[in-house]
Length: 238
Ligand code: UDP
Image 1 (tube, helix red, strand yellow):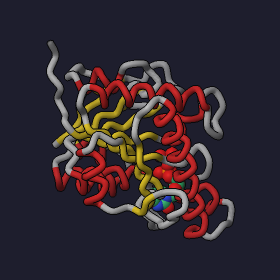
Image 2 (spheres, protein in one colour):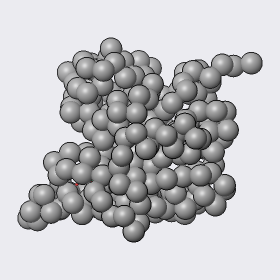
Image 3 (cartoon, helix red, strand yellow):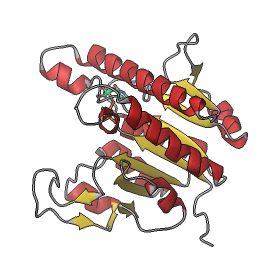
Image 4 (cartoon, helix red, strand yellow):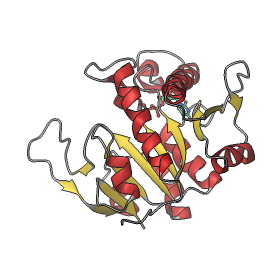
């Protein structure tokens, strides 16, 4: 019998994973699959918190590069994460997984406001908690949100779900010769300027020693494999 390696995890889901074949919007089938994976892991007795991105709908930086005020664009990006969060909550609840969405910007008619102790209580009761709205501040990313929330709720690991199998020395979607790293240190990521997570997100993990596992969320069973201690993706640690 394989042993469960982590009791409480923070799963970061990038917006780009939610798009299916296209590069925009939400593919209901993809969301359904992710919900199923989360359910399997939760059924192992693992507490699951999720930080959801919004890049599949809106990216503040891209809009500001085209002339929009950066802060306004970032607020739109944060709203995009709320849409994704509600879609994931819906998919989870359809398969009987109790789920709460908490937003960093208050919108009480739609979701709970972010309250750390309340989030922890939900996890203890076996509910999945989705953190939407990023940090609530412009100029940040949902990767930084993932590091921040992971620390706040005492998650043992950050699982960053992407479209590729881990961290490579070049973009694997563009170069056939790109090689995957099995393990890296936080400093490697910063020095080599690997586009895994932004520097703010990594620095938080350095300070508080939270390992990050970057993996392919589109491969069935990957989250469960990681929980059971299999080597999947790339592990970043101190
Ligand atoms: N965003 C923000 N502050 C945050 C988190 C996100 O302003 O704390 C905005 C930012 O504009 C970002 C967008 O929300 O481009 C979507 O988040 P992100 O790009 O991190 O999503 P992902 O790449 O994971 O899909």
